[in-house]
Length: 220
Image (cartoon, rainbow, N blue to C red):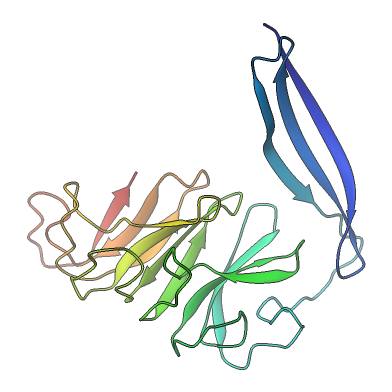
């Protein structure tokens, strides 16, 4: 069968009165055996003049009542990732700890990504986010022990949130999934979201690591 590609461009109105273009690439086969719809979607917003927009705010426009810091941007600037001590950015944020948020400039709303998959709140602080090119994957460090099952090392670990699947993975572990013996921090995620570099004092993440110093590790 032959494969047909179709590019659809749709103008959309934003909540702040601006406009954007939603672009979807659709794939189908001529005999109907393949029907993959919207395999890639990206939104472009033309900026006619410089603008200032507060991302660390609640959905009703209320600015966060506490400190927000360490921002990172997706490649097209749509998603703003940051850490915040504020408790009023999203509903039911009552852990009194720093969390990681993603602000969608098209939808004009924030989502907390430093939460367990069941939607409960983290039981410890999270910090230093890094976002991949399209905003799907967010890497961050956290002292929370309830983001994934069997997190019992009592150390700061590195996590990656897949925003499409709604899943969190702890990546600062050895190849056999042994927990890190010491803390890890400062993750940086690649553009495709498949590789994360981070610092760690752990001596059991790689063989023959006995220098007792901070080392750089890659998870792929």
